[in-house]
Image (cartoon, rainbow, N blue to C red; front, side, top):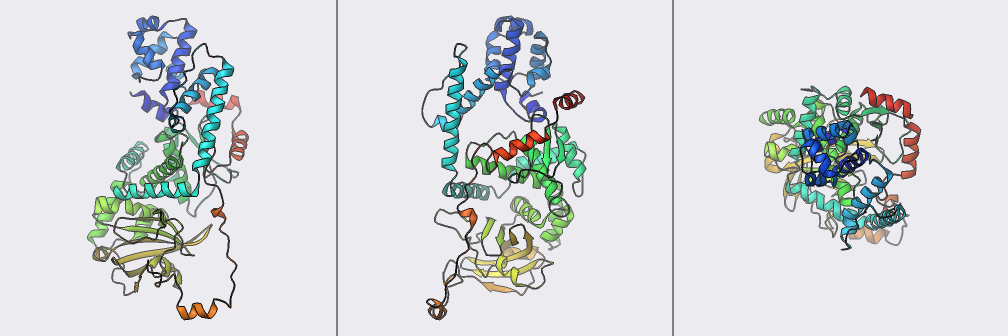
Length: 499
């Protein structure tokens, strides 16, 4: 068995450096040299040295032999905790020096030798922590966020919005808990958590800046007691927390890495709720019947409309041969989220970022708000300077107000979708300002000097972007929460022995 894989599922981490420190600690306690231990387990001292320095991954059989020779258990060696406070500082210094912040300085690595005093080591760690913190604050700017978000959007566009390795991981997890068909149950999600050593705990006092909190020490994932009606969001939040552990995520070292992690956990959650094999089978049948509808796809797997729409874009090109686009737009016309590989002209700023840009008033994503009945999808063809697109939009209401979810395709592809027979048609000339963003001259002349409007301030304009220990999270509130909910040591020890 692969030790790194054991770490990922058993401890939620994958850190050979910690393993090496624990082997060295127990070897020292046993009074053995590298060669002495090597003679007992059939390995050269040089091989053991590589293991202790985190440079070589032992096989599980080798690890079992080492544990027996040192009179400890394999679990003792595989614990994620450094064996001593000194080891903890040495490992943190190593991690900080291997990070991008220190590497960019071009300075040599400082090795924590046995003769280095603890106070010197503590000082070096403290200095590099502060360097890392200041670097995080410097990069967490709106400009950097837009650049990173744009880069990831273009990356996914090149991949047709598909991440096949996460699709495979999701189906592997589903098979392990015996789920075959139909909507995924909360029980199945809880079983997935149990498989990797975690318990789902529902609480009413989660920190306001978190969606979930994972207690790695006690094997708990804290979630709110209720979410989107029907519990769809609750399953998704639990799956996202599980994905962090399955994918071996660690604290992000840049905003780009933070966004990439969010993309991966969201994708895994959607791929688990709407497995690729079953979803493609369902969608191919709908395509044959020329009756693809996001609302049907949504209901078939018991998820939200937005989840179904976004998941459809993961599968449409690779598995159905369809070029598509997706939009989430607020009732003020601001673009919150988007994807396209069909050529739909998206509004963007000079850097290529789309978030916060205003969508044309003639797009279905905007006109859908004007209809009286919003219980079903709204269909529309829109002529643009680069061609005609068919769109299906559904409106909804969230904590930030109303929004619309739109999935669309080029004109020639609309024949595969329900609603393609609609007679509703509009025209967009954007980015031409005379289309919808510039008033008629006679109206502007009438009101330019006869009116005054007080602009509403968007608070997020001035709010800092994610920075700190956990991006976007109030650290003090988080740690207070963990202190309140951590089981006492007797309960924790009993739980670990029972597991």
